[in-house]
Amino acid sequence: MARIPLIPSDDPDAVRHGVFSSFEAEQREPIDLYRALANVPELLLAYRSLPQHLRHAATTPRRLRELAVLRVAQLVGSAYEWSHHRPMALKAGVSQAQLDALASWRDSDRFDADERAVLAAAEAVHVVSLSDAEFTALEERLGRRGAVEIVVAVAQYEATARIIQALGVDVEPSYAPHLVGFEQVRAQVPRGGRAG
Image (cartoon, rainbow, N blue to C red; front, side, top):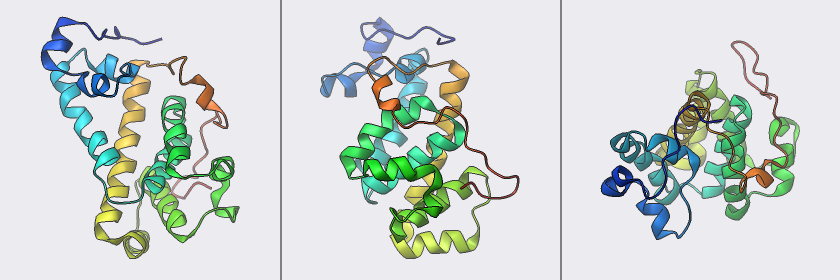
């Protein structure tokens, strides 16, 4: 249960600041994370610009970014992020077989070289130990811009998971069906090592 009020769409402060305008344009209700952050409208406006850029203006293939986000969701134990990004990943071309194998991707033949570089980088950023060799491998696969986009996407969703947990934001009932395949137990990351 959220630790703070979830601001309704017709809240005068929210309307005045236009914090839910992107949802209105898409003709859907705001997600509860944004309703929680709307307790500080100016903060929500600043916060949402980075994920919006990553979602709509980044140049790396969307499937790679969504794989990274879903791996982050597993590593930090964020059911909320998994439930919201699973449908996006499937729409972007990630297969259900890949989602099923994501926690053990290193032992799976379902991931290509680009996907492996992204997943390795996601795990390394998660444990705050991305090496020169790992960054170089990512950059060789995706170019400098792509490597930076993946690093920022991973860090963004690591931060988002912490905000979700700290504010007590639950998975909305409409997203609950997308928890399929999500392990509630946080993936174990060896100390000083890598997950997987």
